[in-house]
Image 1 (cartoon, one colour):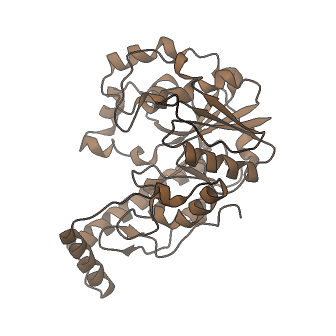
Image 2: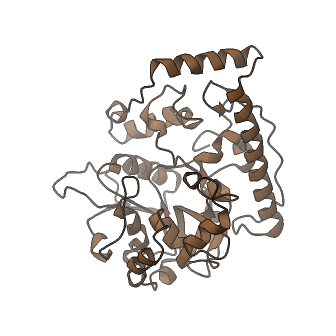
Length: 363
């Protein structure tokens, strides 16, 4: 038997609940565990009534050593995904997914991937050829050395495929605190630690099992056919239906999130967020969009198109190299993918696909 699991606090429990119910629709033979580590232990959580959606409250925090780093965007709860498999050893495979990951369809290839080290992950596509953007022009090799990753490979921790019997033998608590004292540059916390701990031995899974927000605007969805879409941006697709200038692609999923949240008993209006833009910026974006529509690209648009073309080409190169070399453990038939043929539109702020290139969730 296999299972999915989430680790969240009360702030994102609602979307984990809605997604758990959707996963049960796609995978009726799988359990879903939701670990909720509340900041306020008295906070009540509306649970989904399904005997195969199992809730756990404050069960993981006791595993966590003291003195771990945290920030506004990376609270210490992010480390807890590493400890949940100790409580779920009855399963053949576990799949951890962040609450902001959406399953598009079922693919049982997931459960049959060989995991010699006990863990499979997907590359972090924002950093396949460069250091994180906040580090400016730092060479990628220098950044990886600063977090003690020597293999050159770096994964995103939003989706973890785990063999719980192997994974539960690792004693992360013996290494965690010391790692961050020795390598203070490791500011992506659990993700940096997992890349260090499993450096050179983690099993690489192809991008369709963690299709990250930074590559959604390149038009490869119909070609790669993602199973899991990962909205790893500050603006989430359920925050509002107005697409203009909020995010490059995510708001096109607003309608589906509205459906699954309402099916879970939630009112999506309770989770909407405003992102007001100053009037002068709205005028500037509108002018750029008007110029683009009439064949007069602004300097901003020309820069964005050059960057888009470069990044799309690098993604295509990386995926094709991985397919050619047999690097992706989930890929059994494809040896290459075609190059994207879309021409993105410029809305004054972002380049984005002119239309939705995804299959409908569940289809």
